[in-house]
Image 1 (cartoon, one colour):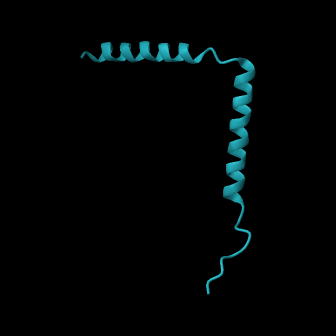
Image 2 (cartoon, one colour):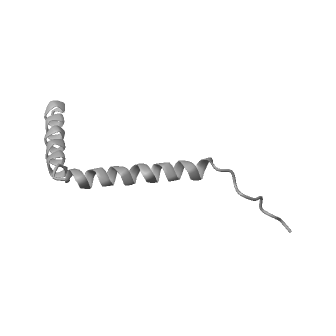
Image 3 (cartoon, one colour):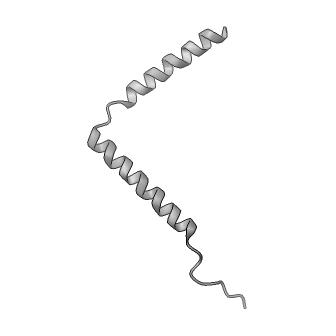
Amino acid sequence: MHPETHLLLHRLRTAELEAAARPVLPREHRLRTQLGWILVELGLRLTQQPPRRAARFA
């Protein structure tokens, strides 16, 4: 397949996927974004805190 034809097909598919993803409601989108950032913040806190106590070996 010619490279330009291949690229055109990819661009058309990208446009189709973007059009299908568009009907997200603004309120729903804001809620999803806010939840995403809360999860990112939680993950960062979990990775930055040192362990609370050292493990004991018998």
